[in-house]
Length: 254
Length: 248
Image 1 (tube, each protein chain N blue to C red):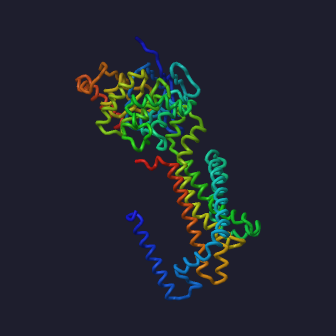
Image 2 (cartoon, rainbow over the protein chains, first blue to last red; image 1 turned 90 degrees about the vertical axis):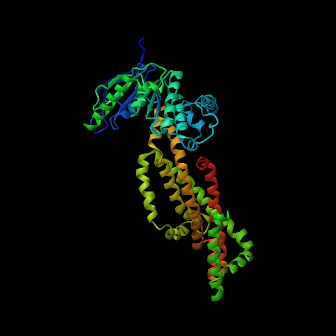
Image 3 (cartoon, each protein chain N blue to C red; image 1 turned 135 degrees about the horizontal axis):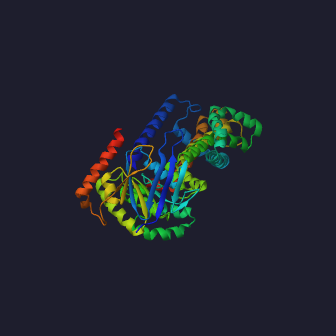
């Protein structure tokens, strides 16, 4: 069964003003309810890809289609979860999660009535009226993820969301994210520089190597779902991991 | 409480002790009164000071501060939303600080006479700057990433202003206001020295001409109390409005 494409880059070129091009006639297709990881050395243009999808940057050439449509203004079409959680320190958990609802015109009461039941599902009950400074790193990331869900978009862009977490919290957050992804039927694009994380989470992995990027190296993860961490020691996966690490190194050393 | 304020209280007590001793040894109460003498004079003059002169000074301070807050915040907002306004006014606001405002005070007395407004203008001139600059810096200090996040959620410029820039500016605004309230007391007192019919600054200066040292100090004690009370009021407002900062 072929799923419908939700994100398409066609012939897209992009460069920051006065700098060398990052994307050159770039192609990419992501299908509905896929989990895609994007790995690559820092500065390889991964975040730029997200900035283009969210509409913070504009393509110089080519087309970017969201859910089959090419839009003049892509603001408000995707759920973006930035690397630092970017919670507003002056807002409580409830108020932070409600930001996208408020922007869509919901009143305070209405927003709260939609956020409160979700907080419970996200394991944040009892923290509704706490401020971000009172939360642990994992909890803050969950609030940030909830906020991106509440944009109502079917495409979620997660930019290294777990990079600041300790190893144990990170593992449980990965499992939690997979559960949420399946339950909420979203398409996720996930930037990481952790190959294990990419292998554990994704259907497909895209590798950013040299700029300007024309096509991304694409790797299908040969694992069925649901997965456990033990699957990562499967010989085929180990081999894939070594290959990916080799590619990332190659990108850096050149 | 004792741990926190004990050392400061001790230093103050020591300084007053030295002052008292030195003043008694010198024995020139008309120019160098001891603290006890000031306290006695303050008590003797309590009715004139509290009923005639304090209200007049307080009015100058409060009206001046109110005008500064309204104009300062308005200008800060304008400069934050319009780059043209920023380029036009920001250099002026900064360089206006090179003008010795206090030295200009006599001009305002000439322009506006001995009534309240000449003193209000002096107060506005010296309190306007910290409020404007701090509020403006606060509005500008908001995180770029957060502003972009609001954009990706489909927010408008107005959303960014109200939901990101204004809350980011609040702590800066309060810092500016704390500086401004202390300056406002100075502004009002200096304005009154130069020409007034009532007020604590005016009274202090009149007593100087009469060589009544203790009566020069008495209104200054009251002015300090006014400054401290205003500062505490602002601090209280700040704590209430920024209660997220008290959580940890």
